[in-house]
View: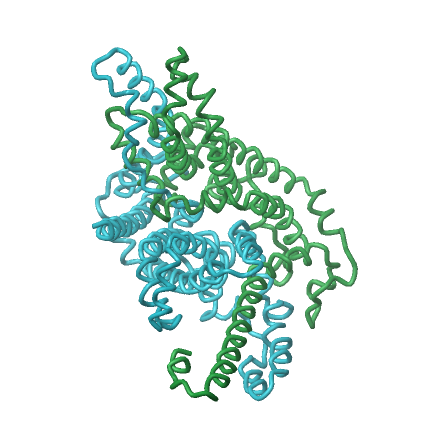
Length: 299
Length: 333
């Protein structure tokens, strides 16, 4: 386009130039929208496919040529999943483990974040580096020793073992993000509360904590998703549905042979554990985006 | 976790916040310092119990012949576990698999993530829809996405094969002039993505790319959004093409965000477990270091040997983190 624009300005030339230019623009627009459509299909289609498989009659699922829409809506797979005691127990376990993780991480994390964001004390820098390095910590590095500790504490195959070990990846992150939140708040609020005779702790939970609500929601959501989706610890530290969560449950849903996978049931279970998450993410889109990219950009 | 979020660099507290506690030697300042420690203590304690102590234990156990199931006395056996691992074909294969997986998936998702980020960053109606849509793969649990894609990659009734063999050739055939040639590109026979040895790793990488490209795109998008728009206007006047603008302006300015995104994805890809374990189990052909360590621990009951493998993964990641911090501090100067 640059060369076209640089052509010598002849009276007849302008018309040609403009037409070529707009043709190029049209092609560009076309390619752009093609790319947008491709991205939408690429990201949404697999999820759509899982939804379809969950409501397809068994014959449709393995039909050749592939059936894109169900010949009729079939509730059997979803019914099977909701009447399956093991899966319901796994669902319950996942809820308890995830909410437990969020509760512990938010309570302890907001305490620590308040101190890290608003106070000066000896040893702060060390704790800062400790927490930062923890956010990059690979859970696999401690799998064996955690296993041994859990056995020794008689917590093998229990939900507390999961909540406890999930702190490795939720707590440091929670402290980090919330500390940034507290740090950004104006100091006057806290000072005036202190002048009015509140204790620092009262100033914290009566004034700063409500203000930090957006940060709490963001970190809570991210911690919930991380705990809900966790697989390695859940697979390794549980072995029955007394504590097993939905991720290992879905991974082990299988038929008699590899050619006999119960795809309808697997996809129905997958949809059940994924749809609430997708809705949550779409509703809290902005908060999640802010939390995800907090710090990717220096600001 | 790093796939979930990237921590911001936390600088020293703002002067205003510090003022409250800066009255030296007063009993009030002391009380405040005590309060600070009381508030921090539970988190520090938990992180120590749940990560630091186990890490030191992993290192200690890696020099022993410890087992999980037996109560027999544990002996220190020096570097025997490490010697065993580096002489073990399965472990050496798992190192190469991990490197292959990490390099390929991070490279592909960086390019794709860049395209997606540039698209969302340009002004058009419906960019909010695209931005919401790319959050869907991110939110879907890895276990679910692995199973879902296994179903889609099925060699007889999988939708990918149906698209490749039946639908897409028909679709492109409509395009004038080049349609016939394009249709010829597609395979005539359905492909056994999950069963053919040479396709297993690429298939797992494809699933990982689908799941993690959104994260990459969002980080790059955040970087793009702080680039001021007027520099583009100036260069457009100077006659620079879009392509030149991207290489000479966007990319250099995006460097810090790109670096952070690259490293966090690299660290995450390097400890890959879920996607490959769910698709192919513990098969040697696709085994990664994390799968090796987990299998050695749980199925093999070799606590010492598994710990040695874990320590090796930890060291690799520590080296990557070190390089990362060096690169970032170079950026800062």
